[in-house]
Amino acid sequence: MKILKKTFAYILPALMVAGGTSNCSDFIEIDPENKVPEEEVDFSATSEMYQPVVGVYNEVRASAMHYINALLMFTRDGDVWSGRYDDQGPAATFSREFVYDNSYWGLNQVWINWYNIIRIANSALESLDGYAQYLSEGSEDYANYQAYCGEVRTIRAWAYYNLVTNFGPVPIYSDNLQTEFRRATVESVYNYMLEDLNYAMQHMEHMRPNEMVHQGAITVYTAEMLAAKIYMLTDNWEQVETLTDDIINNGNFSLYGDYYQLFKIPGKLCDESLFECQVTDFGQGSGDQITVDQFFNCQGPNGSYAWKDEDGDHSMSGITNMVNSVSGWGFVGYEPEFVAWAEERGETVRATTSFLKAGGTTPEGWHIGTAAATTTDCWNGKSYVPFEQMTPGRTTYGSNNNVRIFRYADVLLMNSEAKIRLGKDGDYGYNEVRGRAQMSTKIGVTLDEVLDERRMELCSEWGYVYQDLVRTGRAATVLGPKGWTEDKKYWPVPATQLENLPDLALEPVEYNAASVSE
Image (tube, rainbow, N blue to C red):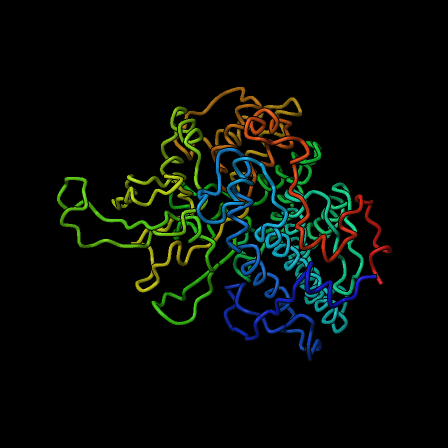
């Protein structure tokens, strides 16, 4: 029996949600009223019932957008790496050599980040149940309660998705008073997630997130997309097809016309978005703002300044209007081989968007100094926000931009893959994505072509390409020369976790709620 204090200190260190309330009904990530554990909440005030949900979104912003998640999770597919050996060197060996140091602080932090979200989600569900005792079943308010539970359950399932695809067997933390933490099998975690998502799909709104009263809140289609991702991992292509068909046929989603602007301020909460983390500077150059801290900043060119070529000689001579809004920490770099592959296949729109090169020029005309290069010379351009789009006074790298998590383009490609695997025509989704990128469309699309399209379309986004390599059995061929082996499919349990919760070293078991609850 582990004592509760140790549980919270190590596997789930307490990060109390900041207090404060807001009357802003169209922004779902203002710091919430409720705290964890709950203190003096009046559950009879059912008009405040959405506050626990806001707390979960707030924790997504705080924990899911921790920069170390990008540094480790985005860099596992052979196309992207940590970008630097001189700083956070273990991250480079993780991504380029598949040498896993389980004592690395960053690995432990990734583990903690996702369990923080799960803990806050568990508390939010308890709070929602507290409000529900004052509601009448069958009423509109009760339907709202169920929908809010669906939002929380979907986010909780997403946190487990990121844990299980990176760490494999992990503990299922079903109750904030739980004291037993033996790891559950991967299949058990999948099933636990699907239970949450099935509930969500029964009770959430059939809308796009940008149509919701709480604008940007996730919907039934978000849950369907996440469920489809789980079914992809288990080769259940009938379910993948059914779920993505529903999103395509009934969700009224569409690809944002400009791929470059999709990842910038104009693309916030567009009709392509199924899930994104919102930020805002309220249009003010100083004062309060809601940010994702260093999530974008860590991915930008390090030590770089940008300038516009006023005299036409392509040099910095006579330049006085230099800006540092494209200067970051220099992590998350593209491998030269991937950049060459993309350019050889004729990528223009997506290459311009995805690749931010030292010595290159942005579409706005800003030259990026070659001095920016340390150990990589091409960074994740999807994290770049042009100086012209920033609020004056707010010029930190990526300032005021949302983080894209789930996109309709991914749904279309999942649908194409499912149909092809089921012996059907998968051309539609594939060609929709290709058309937006100004690439030629095709007839009789093959599985290899869809996987290549996913590789390009989703590069540097949440480890999706690595997951594709593993689930298709291609990781050994693609990553084997770099040191990847089957036993390195998942990261090891962090040393700090093993030290304080030794049961994590035991063989995973089938999940049984009774065995882990008091």
